[in-house]
Length: 199
Image (cartoon, rainbow, N blue to C red; front, side, top):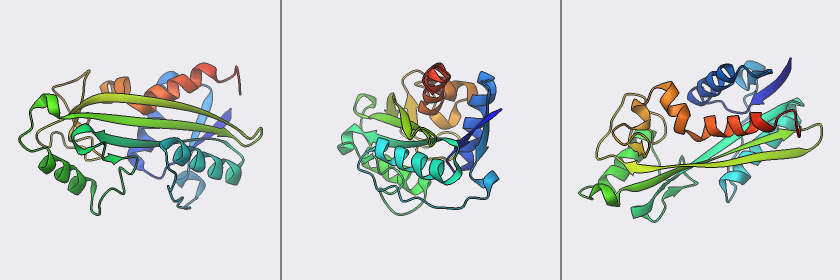
């Protein structure tokens, strides 16, 4: 069975990708950086999400010789002029909780209609054998909640409510609900539609 390397060291991302590929019952065996003993840290210094995703996919694809998938995401709050933007993890010092707390403070007192936000993600797949990329850009629109909701603290999940589930934050969604609206699931499914046709 052909392998696909998922280029992430983040356990939350890895678990989600595992579920998606398992659910789709596709004939690609997933492997991860930690399973291959790779500890390299790639600086995400691109000007766009696509540049960052492609940089990771190409680096680890060339390093391992495997078909490689990488993703990057941004969180855009309209009232804040689009910040944190593509620098979602590097927007300010501290933890994910610290960054979420800062956003809630800046939006304190705003009506729901003024709390619009966008989760944008890019998945890049790189095949080192043919030196070719495939990429998938996907977005999920929603609102910033007025408080932390949910126990799963990952990124901005505790304060973002997608339009499809306006009464829940990402952190409160079941795995199935999250994969119905999240960019990773959508991106993988788009990739699987073309796999075997163009790769």
